[in-house]
Each structure stands twice: as structure tokens, then as C-alpha cells.
Image (cartoon, rainbow, N blue to C red; front, top):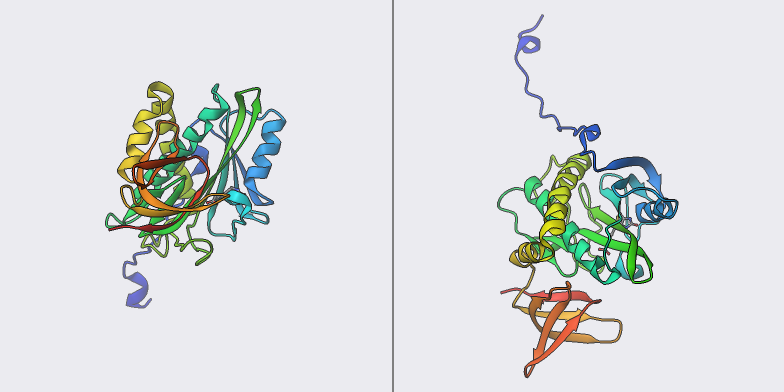
Length: 268
Ligand code: BTN
């Protein structure tokens, strides 16, 4: 036997998360391919699926982004949608997109090199070095003014990014987390989401808002915002108690925006 066969070898092995170890809060439904995990979760929610049902697919054929945009969904990235049924007013539902954004942010902080600059961009994107790495899409059903169910859909670019779509993008692998796995991010997200959700249930929106503001992209800076009707420029002054963006447009005038896209920022 040659010496080389006896020599010790080091294999750099990707750590595969054991997803049977997810917290008992979650009921994982794992699919190879689906139209959209949000669509599937909404179908299940309508049929009465319990809170904590988590639909995860390896790829999507009709992935959906905010404002009717497409979410390109090849294998290698994370696509998941979580059903929630909190007993809250429909108007409080946006708070849960910030709960989810903070949980994704925490999961990515855990995964990326410590030097990476990670931010949350209003309303609920995650950026690394100013490029989009994750997005969140909420869909809901109401009974009167109460929320009946909420689907929190999350896409994380793990292995690849779509390049410049509506905003520059990146992935975990491109951002230095070369060994990151879809399963690992899913596990870190579910652990963090449980903690942040407990905090939100116990203490309300304030601690979530505080954490979000701490890592908000372009807070206090000049930004450009596109609503359905207009293009606005101003200073990103605050996130209000409902999750709306407060924009100072000049001469003391403030606009409170609940639905819009921040299309450009001018970080100093
Ligand atoms: C956005 O930034 O526009 C939101 C993107 C949300 C994408 C995720 S991927 C999993 C889930 N299923 C979908 O069809 N969309 C969300």
C-alpha cells in the first residue's frame, strides 16, 4: 500500500442540518418543486392547516415577489412559507413582516462572515453590502377586521442571485458564506423566528422595531421611494409604530408610507 493512502486526509464537509430537529412549533412540509410556496401555504391555510405549518420547496416554477414581480427560483436557494394564525387586527399584520425580517437578519448574521455588512431595507428586504439577499412576501385572509391567517413567504439567495433585477442582488455563497446550506439557513431562521415571535407576543412591536431600526438601511439618509402614484425623494426619518416609513420630504413636510418601494438610497 502506498504511503499516500495511509496519510490522514481532511475532508471539508458541508454540515447538513437535521430538519427533523426543528422546534415542535413547526410542521415541515418539504417539496421538490411547487408553483409557489406561498400559493401552497395559502391553499393549506384555507383548508385549515395549523399555525406553524412551514412549506419548503427546493425550487419554484411561479415564485412571486412583492407588487406582482417574479421571484426567480432555481434549485440551491431557500424558498419557504410559514402559516401563522395570531389573534390580531388585520392592520397589525405588517408588524409580523418585521418579526420575520429580524429573524432572517439574525439567521444571516449567524451564517455570514463577521465582517459582512448586513442591513434591513424597508419594508422587508435583507441586504448584504447594499445588495439584496432575501425578500419577504406576506399574504393574508381576514374575517371582518381580524386576521384569519397569514402566510409569511421568505426567499433567501443561498447559492445564486438573479443579478440586477429591480435592485442589485447577491447570495450567501457570493458574499463569503461559501459553505452555507439551504437547510442550515432554514434551521437558524426557525430558531430565531420562534424567539422573536415570543418577544413580540410578550412585549409588542417595540423591541422588534428597535432591533430593525438598529440595522436599517439608509436610516437618516436621503432615499428615493416609488409608490403606485409617485416618485418621492426625502430623508428616511423613522419607522413608525405600525411599521410605516416616515419620509421627510422638505420644509418640515412628512409623508407616512405604508406601501412603496425604496428604489435608491444614498448612504453616507
Ligand atoms: C420580494 O422581495 O419581492 C419578496 C420575495 C418573496 C419570495 C418568497 S420565495 C418563497 C415564497 N414563495 C413565493 O412565491 N414568494 C415567497
